[in-house]
Length: 147
Length: 392
Ligand SMILES: [Zn+2]
Image 1 (cartoon, each protein chain N blue to C red):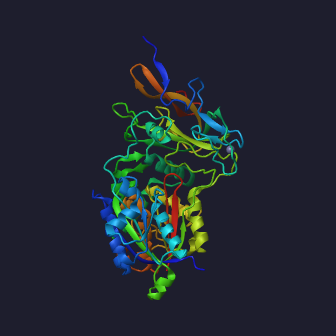
Image 2 (spheres, helix red, strand yellow):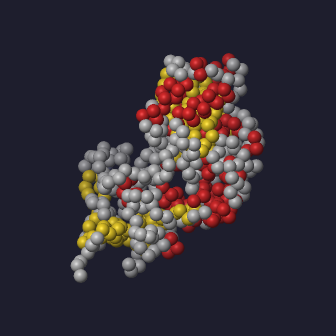
Image 3 (cartoon, rainbow over the protein chains, first blue to last red):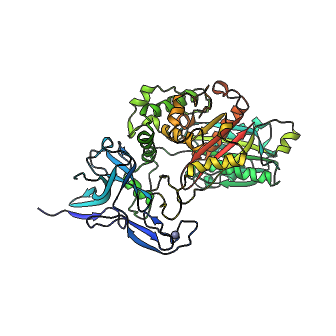
């Protein structure tokens, strides 16, 4: 039995170590965070002229700002299993960064199990598979729930 | 000095999925507005077009495209693009030209033809493009609408019945509007039985994309007075940008601004606030409002953003009947996006057309009795949003 390959579905947005982190930018002048990392070199804070940023791991935990699900198959570039399996999506507020980050919710959790304010943590899970390769992405998981 | 301008005429091409060139809708709407104003095209000194990004080069230079289609006659020209606020920005350009003394009469036109099917992003592997990434994750436009709906349910006790009541209300309003695309009086059951798109939103809670065209003829107050015309006036046009740190989850973003170094701000609340400030009016002065119900649930958010009630009170306002025709402050008397579907560069102008017909008492079966002041509000991609206040 061959081991499955684990690679990032979207390169440069998160680490693949455990526990995984999203990779953001932090302004070296004012401390504002950005996700995804800034591609242009200017801080968006109007009171800051910062142009240098550090790549930093973002908090792995936060609380649900809101949530929903995808009940019908999204168009490409979404890669759908056949048949399509509905999945939940959460917007999670990170306390330290004071920002909200969207993401899929881990498989097996649906909107009935979610609530605004619920603590969530970041994990890696397969977004889709190609042959023996799992394309991993960040997902939100209710804290304390075994995957 | 008054900063107001007169609205001499308005006109529209009915919304639909006609599949024709957008220029046809724009010219139809322009001729209707000019006829309504009683002014020949050759008297127009400034033409301001709202651009469309979906119809090739003629769409990028919409002002000139409409001018050529109506017949070159030497007018000065402008084209504005600001996503769903394009029409308001084109209107603001015309108003500025009038107030600066550059012209007496201006024509503002917006029109769009929408492609069939999904607006899919470009193919390939593009991890540097957040819009590509969110589609790759399966985060579609209704996802964003649903996030706001779910939050209202958990925080404020909104229900599926409330969102459905908004749709049923707007469908009843739009049934009497000859320019609306959908004129069916949907029932509660039909809405609830339509397919689930993004929980809690059903297909009939989410607006479609449409073809359509709308036009407005503006003039200086002096010009209107010289002709002895008593017309509705534009009292304010707000096209503000957001303030960092913007705390609202915005399509197509994956994350909000971070509020660690700057206070958090609500962009949507700021749009109407600026319009009220400019007009010297407040929500208590309104007779009606036209707001952007991209999803039925978002109409409730707008009640709060435009100050009809405080956060958390929109459901109570809806249930009281205040926002339906015959109520204290009817919202989307035109039928709103629920009945029109979105024709991006024409939509903000269509909202203004409705206010003008209402203030003139010419809205027929959907007339708001004694209408004196109305506001429009919309918000869309890339930091764009607008509000226009029209008064008698
Ligand atoms: Zn900075």
